[in-house]
Length: 189
Image (cartoon, rainbow, N blue to C red; front, side):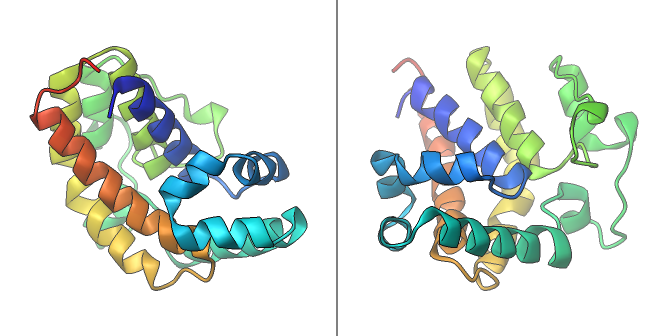
């Protein structure tokens, strides 16, 4: 694993978790064999054997059901039963962002929570780009691992499409291997 690969995967994960897939996303996914292979065999076969319109409809229904209607991928919602989004520096994620010079302009996105998984993955991407090693480890320890792993394990059972079932596994596996990579100080590749 190298930083270029890590940047690409975190950008992809940020996009996957930020919004329903649009037609361009479906087209790009369908044409990216190497990405399909790393997501999972079931996804690879499913994407290859279905046309773009079928994929678009199925993935949009699945995303909406999983990440909008049933539960949102928001750290504070998962870790705090109150389902409240803390604002400003009251939110531990916002405090972490602020400490590391990451500004989240909530006016520029449809996402309403600064601790939404799509934004957290984008933050990891920024830390990699800046080559900030220790903050990557700290963010994984303090923010991603405590909620994303159990959240994805639970969400997998709700997934109706191979894509989102495989994505739940892929996210857990990628975060684990990324953490091992960082802890091994192998960030120079």
